[in-house]
Length: 64
Image (tube, rainbow, N blue to C red; front, side, top):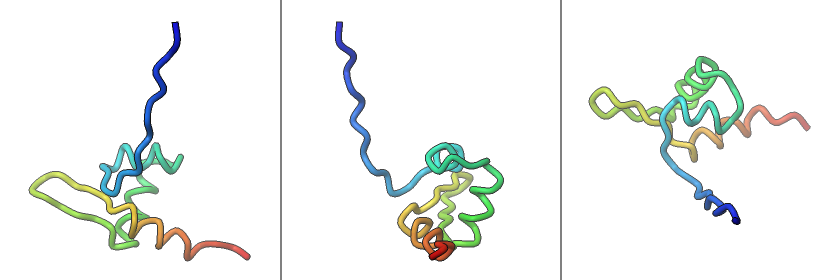
């Protein structure tokens, strides 16, 4: 019996927990970086992180 492969689609908005897992970092560090990047969206009590903005912010830390 074959396993069905899970199709991975690029999400634009994620919650803190999912984003921390995607970027292999702790939740507190992800929250801090997302806030510093200005990538936070708040809808009532739900907080989402815009990964397009977050990725651009992470690129500023690139060492050449």
